[in-house]
Image 1 (tube, helix red, strand yellow):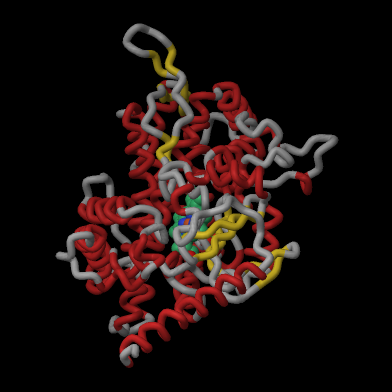
Image 2: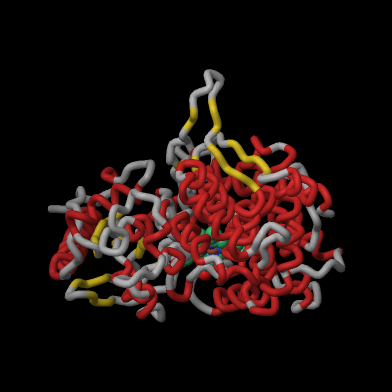
Length: 507
Ligand code: HEM
């Protein structure tokens, strides 16, 4: 006769079989959106490439549709590849589709818990988004930063004049100058400034840990308790090493703000707590380093570098933008924010830069907070919602011949009215209640830099040592944020008069 223990084991095994069968049956009864068939347990994990995932998802979307179902272990993933699906689900139903998946590795383990992409839907999110509204989005704030943006452009122009070959670094510094002053109230003039170096190290370490939400521990949070010495706990050791630099980054500005009287975002938020925030508020205040500097620097510099790349590859576009600039602004003054609406070709050129290689090709995933239905399909609660912005940027219904760089597609013509044009800036900054809070500020900084470059410099293809003209390839470094691979071009002032004017700038 079997012992009591044996009966218990048999009972437990039967229970597991019943629970798994019921769970499977309930899933099978669901009418999930179509998608590539996955394997048992891991789902579609092995089908996912390490690089340029957005392009693979775009190809799968052509087969399965713009609302596609994937599974990563037990997590349902819904990939939205059209603007219509993204707007219906993420904008119109934003009340229950604005949570984030738990980013256990990036948030809890690497130390980015205060970064908004890791903050779940609710009161904390509203609090931090309000700080960002007050700090970078309100009309008054946007106006108040114009002087700073002009000063930063002065530094950019002078650097481009002196060492044009280092344009990638000069663009980086331009964005760093602006964001460091906004956040910490500190003026920086070099990428070697301690605040910038510590931040860049923290960002690199965070980026090197992969796309947030993509680690095994994100699907099996219990793994975070594995001790670091455990043979297969490499991820744990990696997180500890990265966290050291992330903590240094988040603390340096915070400590500075505790003692500084310079007006800036950190000081203003800290003052709301009389300089003594609770532990959780402190995490969120420190997170502003990621939410302002981290989120802003990577994306904005990527757009500016892409602008230079596209202008090098498409000289006819650059010439047209310059003609418009000369006609509207003339040659006796620098372009200013007041010229923005009078330069439609430049605006269209920037839209095409945003479209051609969106800086965050898959934005940041959202998470649905309740069971939902869309076009007759079930969207299970807890699904990860991925807006494939890259697929939207290749939608031939809106962008015929999508690989062509053509600002003309946004200009109204007799047959094309304003309404039928889909501006990429309406989706590359994300959706619904999680839409990028830095959008207007980023677009203003980017516009001012680009307008001044067009007005004052020529951009041409470089020649190699044998005198051959080099057309830089349109290649991008794949990752959470997409950047052009380093390339060469020739940037020269348009006249001696311009050289004199730039030299007189007190940057
Ligand atoms: C060209 C520049 C930029 C691009 C393309 C960009 C794009 C995006 C995208 C796609 C998202 C995800 C939105 C979503 O989940 O639906 C996002 C989120 C965010 N962005 Fe930006 N961004 C840029 C610049 C900035 C700047 C300058 C700041 C700050 C000053 C900023 C701060 C943030 C923050 C804090 C979030 C997280 C919002 C949340 O989770 O609620 N971004 N951005």
